[in-house]
Length: 358
Ligand SMILES: Nc1ncnc2c1ncn2[C@@H]1O[C@H](COP(=O)(O)OP(=O)(O)OP(=O)(O)O)[C@@H](O)[C@H]1O
Ligand SMILES: [Mg+2]
Image (spheres, protein in one colour):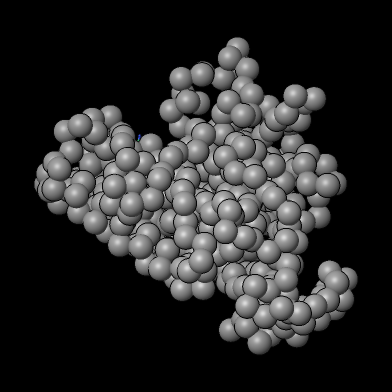
């Protein structure tokens, strides 16, 4: 499922986020996926704020730099949208085939999307029979404002890149998680039973958390929340009385000197955000409690974060790594570097995987 896709050739995944551009190109071999090209290029602070491009020059320059570093074999990209720009809703509808739904989707969407239907890109995915209403089916409806996608397309085109596919961040995350083999997609049509596997994919970036709860590998709940590593940087700034830059540097280069109070306040905030989402999820899925949190994004690099969340939320937690499930030649890529930043690359990896959709 993607908001739009017009690809016929290979794609690179380009994650345009608040702290930087992450570019990933993958190849497919007989033994699985391999990393072909990679670049992580930082963006100046405030170039992108709450997912809105403020400084388009800085963003297109960073894209050009990413191309130069990675030297991908294509200029066609899959990108993602998230946060306020996207509306994702699970709705219950009378049973219909995918083909029938194509013709009705605008009418359905009109009732659930607070914008003029002509101003949005729409997509949907049939989840299967509704658990609450036998005879009806649950459908995930996605809408994204055209102007948001167009803003992204414009900066990309200035760097000579064409967005051939626009995906929702939470779906890209799901694709990436599938490749890591952490969870399995069982039967898409069967209703889950008491043995169901319930995993929450949680990508924690600098200012955004993307959550996707999967029951037997099937999306059951998605939500984006504004909270992330930036909050920790600000707590460090306050506690240590230093600049934002210095706080950011301390976090990455000297984590052990962070005052425990700053870390504690960050975790209290993070925990309450996550509890809020998990409560929303369980309001409709009380019989399928989340069994495992699978963490990714830059904040998954925080030392000990899985153990910390496990204790605070009482749910098993681990960090997702795209490598070594995705092979990377040690001649071309620094193994230690990939090992270190892998969890932060789940999103662009998920986007790059769009190039292999059948
Ligand atoms: N080694 C590390 N230890 C602690 N925090 C880290 C580390 N590396 C990165 N981070 C933090 O992770 C965040 C960046 O993560 P990520 O790249 O996933 O965010 P982003 O995609 O740019 O932001 P968003 O998607 O929220 O707009 C920053 O807040 C950064 O300080
Ligand atoms: Mg991000």
